[in-house]
Length: 254
Image (cartoon, rainbow, N blue to C red; front, side):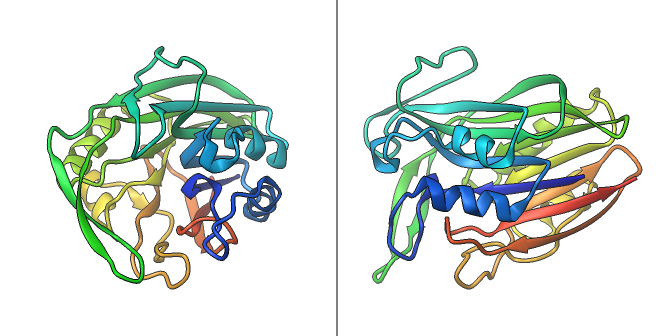
């Protein structure tokens, strides 16, 4: 079973700045995941042509189940408001998703509160600049899938960029997953470098390679962690024509 995570950058390509659903679908097919965690996912946003990027991904995968969970309603960076479970109004939104080619037996949500402070962020470009950004609420989508008669719990998330607060969110997810069927796999952009997520959780890293920026990866922000169960995992990363992140994947055996 292949589990993967991909921060979409709302489907944008760095080469020309375009959001092309066909290009995104091609990238998704190249990942060839049975279960795919997505971050920075748009639905109905003008900047991404009004497309439902979760639906585009699901169709490209041949998925039998998909779930988009908005964390922001409106336009990120402009006019937006937080969105919690059950607050989706069906309009333009931004958040995370989980897409599966395998049957999903159960799913749930783990709300993760936003950091109460603004944090300095470096915006890349020809002249990088530092801005103070307000954090947005975060979420984890959890699903139990079945593969060859074995049940596996998989969670998708995108943690805060605020140092320390993302560690707190990670520990909260770990506590919430303690009672779910084992093994447990956490996939997502954790905004934490290298071995730190594994050190915090005590879980195993299925991927040990830099994922960001995709043009010249220097740091691993995108992770697949395996905990609570005996399972072997071999992983890697894929630079693709979409996003400023590489996709990370892990083939699970057990």
